[in-house]
Image 1: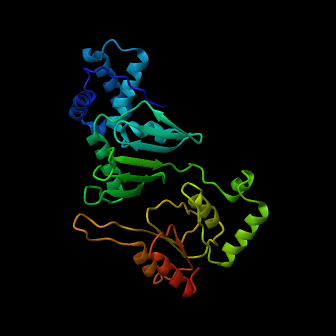
Image 2: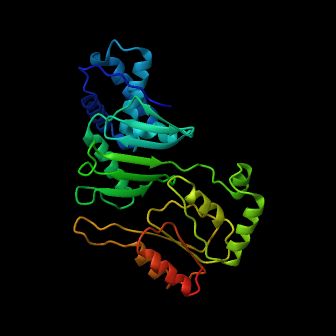
Image 3: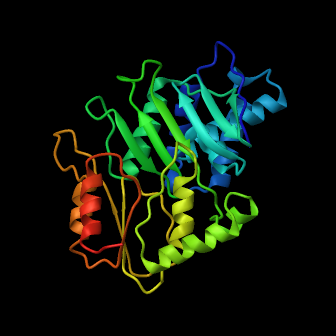
Length: 302
């Protein structure tokens, strides 16, 4: 469900949200249910004279807006995360939000109240994967619990304000049968690739942005024999490999504010060779770690 909130010039929605937050906190917010929180928000909005003279549709939208801000981690973006028809969410500063729906881009009539609200959301997303974003580390890649990829750019290098991009992953994993059914690949090519993977050939997948590289790698991973030990290395974890029991997942780590603690893709590739792998999967290479990967192939690893 999408939100369209119409606010009068004299309404400080941020202040109202903080007032309701205080009310919920006083009522022991951690123990009340979403239903109880919604009832409290509805009661507050309907009684507040500042919010009078609004249509029923505007009132419902306002109540949902406040609820998502207080009870959902993704604030006003939560409805788009929950909408299965939305594949990408793009926030260009606090006032411009776009979504990709059915393969088409559209702007939504929804904005963050302040730049600080957007920044706080980005910091929360980064903190989930133990990463930081600030003026010293202005770029972050992360992922949500459902596997969706998050990229954020801080305001000191983005001239129109903080930038947030969320690429959602389908809830149902795509397999080779689905790709064949969509005409993305022929049955003959699929059978050939299955034989290559099972035989342990080294495989590279390349392509442009949003061309389906990660999806295709996920599909090919289904052909890996289940009794193998697989080391999975990613810059930001997003691959969904579930059929392998002996699976080691490793993710790169950015340096902290003291510029310490960085773990690069090259570091992980080197250490993976000492983990007795039958097969190594590298989610993405774009720099000098390519040489480390090629050297790993020379040692006989697939």
